[in-house]
Amino acid sequence: MERLTLFNVNGEIGEGAYEQADFPDLNSLVRHLDYLGVERSLVCHVAAIDINPAYGNLKLMKEMENFPQKERFFPCWVITPGCFFEKDTLSLLHRYLASGQVRALRIVPSVSRFPVRQLERLLLQLVSYKPVVFWDCCHGHDELAFRDFEYLAGRFPELSFVVTQKMWGGFSSVLDLLWRCPNTYVDTSWLHMNEGIELLVEEFGAQRVLFGLGYKSHYGAAIAALVFACISEGQKQQIAHENVENLLGIPPAKKIRCGSSALLETKPLWRKFCSGLGISGVEVIDAHAHTPPFTRGWIQRQSDIRTGLQKMIAKMDRLGVSRLLVTPEMALFGDCLSGNREGQTMMQEFSDRFSGYLVFHPLYSDRLINHLDTFFKSKFFVGFKILPSYWGVPVSDRRYLPLWEYAQRFCRPILIHTWDDVDQLKDIVPRYGDVSFLLGHSGGGTKGRQQAEELALSFPNVYLEFCGSFCTRRPFETSLRLVGADRLVYGSDAAAHEMAWELGRYLSLPLPDDNLLPGLAANIKRILSRIQPV
Image (cartoon, rainbow, N blue to C red; front, side, top):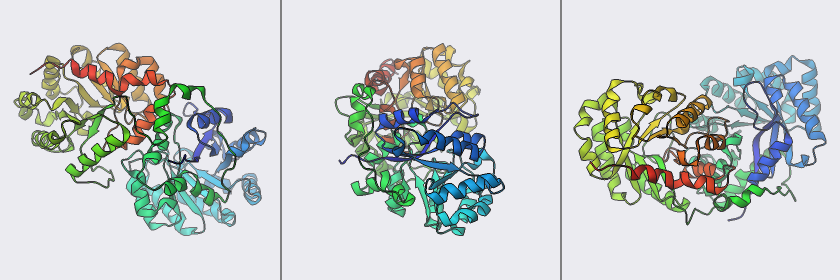
């Protein structure tokens, strides 16, 4: 495969008021780009978001002015509706846009606190320069903001509007926007959804998709998703750099070489993976997966369960994944007893690649208890899965007692969906020392991650599970160093999440491969080896 030339559309530098900075300055951003092999990037300054646009935009230009590798960066100025009324700011915008020094504008309405529609008056002043307007969604969702963005795209058909950092929640609004407004685009930074890139290319063409890295803590996730996407090499290059170059009206990069990173010498798995080759010679057991189909806002191309399972196996083969531990979706969100049976029947055909988690829904507790032995004697189910926050039944509910007691008696692992609610397990975990508690998504956000770390440090039967842990800037390598490499299990959340996205993020963590190998298979195998026969 031809190496992709990469142009990142959502770079930022500077320290602000609300989060720990990913990149305090251009030097730190360069090191990150060099490590990942990304040649160029748009860049804005956090001070323009957290303090004032003019203040931060000028701060960015000053830092870029004498930077030795400034040819790798293109300024993206932050704007708000207030810029129209700040006469000096409006004058600055006219001057820098007219000179061609600035070709891109960024809006972050969720932080800057303004309705998107209010940008109309400012854009009327700037439309003649044809800037590209990037909307940073901050991975959240505001449907009214989407309708306002649609209005602006229709109001200014000569401008290009790009939605960036959008994930699964409300992704249907992105698709609707792209359908309604041909001058709108989307970036790949948070497209962790299964076949998200393929869906966009099939529906709207590769020319409507731009490459973005997302948080620093995502590392190579977006690169892996693009490399392994089932689209043509030409379409990959379009997404990787050509589309944004065309929108900005700049020529392709010439003779730009990323600096070397000594860490890459210790990461042959990532070097191979990001070139489009699957893992070989290393066992990979994915400890968190689901059967299709999905709802609750998920947009997927595949709804047939059996076909979906076959496609999962084909992707496993391509990426180098040996086995998936899968939860039947119909048991999570339907009749738990019949859903577990249906999932078992369907997946046992593929028992050489799948093992199962038995769903224990507290609403069906009395009905399930008498069938647990039968389920586990089949050897297909290896542990339990629960979704307390989705179901609205906290883990303190007494209807979970049969689950804890059964898992304790037979040393069965329990995969628990967690999202900033890990503290609820503090009184439960120490009572059941023979149960391996797998904290799905490692606690979710920053608060949840810190809770998960604390719980794992307090109790040896607690493990962090990897997938979906990207919704915080907290580096996962920090968590891994704190709890130890033997307290992590790798999972992808397939087939909802894109396997390549999650595996790419894991393999590209800035740690030597030796630190990552236990989480790929050894840890979950050790957990499963403790299971006692029914």
